Amino acid sequence: MNQRVLRSAEELVERANRDGQSGRVASSGELDRLARDLGQLLPDWYLDLLARVPLIGLELGVQQAGPEPAEVSWLEWLGPSSISSESLELYPGIALSRHGYLCVAGCAHGSGDQYFLTTTLGDDPPLIQVDHEAKFEADLPLAGGLVEIAPALSAFFASAKTCLP
Image 1 (cartoon, rainbow, N blue to C red):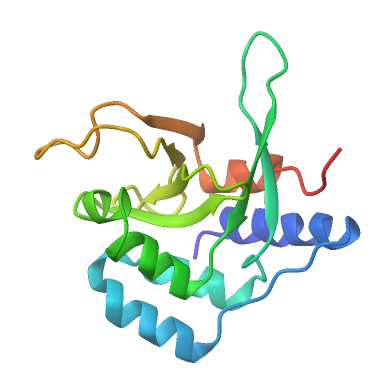
Image 2 (cartoon, rainbow, N blue to C red; image 1 turned 120 degrees about the vertical axis):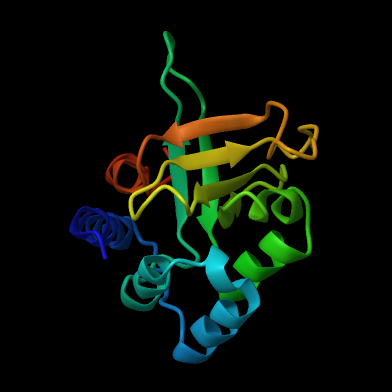
C-alpha cells in the first residue's frame, strides 16, 4: 500500500476521533465478498486500506477551491456492501465501473452525487465526485458531471474536515 495514503488516512481518523467521530474497519468476510463481487475493479491496496484503517462510516467535509469560500459538502465513507451496491446495482456506478471507477463514498445529505476513485490510476488516485444527473455515453464514462475533489486520495484525507462548524 502507498505509505502516503496510509499515513494520511490514519491521521484523518485521529482527527475524526478527536472530533467525536468513529469509523470501523471492514471484516475479512466483508472484504472477501467485495473482492468476489467486484473482481478486477477492486485493487488490493484499497482492500488493505479498508481492513487496516477505520474509515467506514466517517462523515467527512470537502470544500472546493475557488475565488470565494465555498460551502462545505459532506460525504460518508462507504463500507463493502454499499461499495458493491453502488458499483454494480445503481447508476452512475453501473456505467462508471466499466471505465475503472470505484464508488467509495456517498453524499451524506442524500443528493445522490457519489464519490469515486479511478482504480486504473495507481495507488493514490484522484477523488472524483459524480453528478447523479450527468448524461451517459457508450464510449465515455460521462459526458460532463465529473468534478475532481482532490488530485490524490492522500490529499483528500489530509484536507478533509471532520466536524460540522
